[in-house]
Length: 105
Image (cartoon, rainbow, N blue to C red; front, side, top):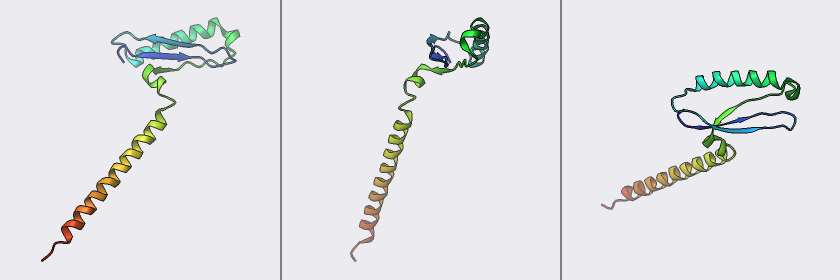
């Protein structure tokens, strides 16, 4: 994971918190998950009355979080362009075959 930026969010009754943190180089996702489970348990015990049991903690690489809303659109554009390129290649191949098939004796 290296020095990837991560985002933590809580969801609940309007008290949402967003946190951006930098992970030390060499920290594995398993180590991060173990540490964050400790933080989550501490948070739940400390704010049990305020969190009302609707505490959600999730982590995403910062680059993925920024593009999360646009990713499906960008994938559709990429696949549309690949399809157009395939059609163009098929058309050129057809023209070359037609040109080669019309040879005069």
